[in-house]
Length: 199
Image (cartoon, rainbow, N blue to C red; front, side, top):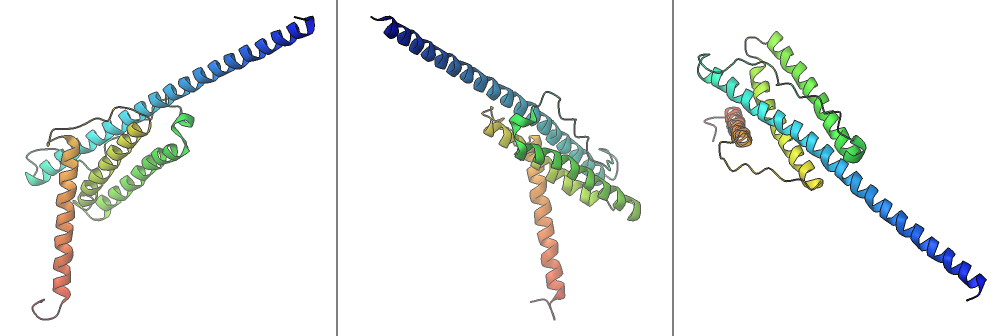
């Protein structure tokens, strides 16, 4: 083999080795980024699930107070506190859509809370109760759906609640009751607007 051929062979081998090393490093970086994304999603899903459970607990205490004429439960007038999102969350890995959704969720909670307090102030004694109960259901179930979506998106284990009396089930059952009652009221109002006997 001539010196020229030998040098070309060495250069080619070096280029291949460099390409392989770059490929390995790229794979390691990608794997690390995925792990960071999964961990961030887990932190975020955990916060949302805790808030969902807190909404369910507060709903049970609020309904217990109303249904027992104050002998049981607690007369809550506010949402439970949504915990601060952990500093460990890498929002770039979570993605702009989920980041916006989560921060909009917190902003929406604050807005609804202000509305509830205004109803208590201007329509006492329980003007805000109906809104609070409905929104505890809505926001609790939204947190549940978002947490499950994050778990699915980032390949995390989906938490299966088999108990029919789980906190999520309680929110879902209460939503069904509220929807049925609102439908009943709508039908009743429509019947009252009809002439004669309403038929």
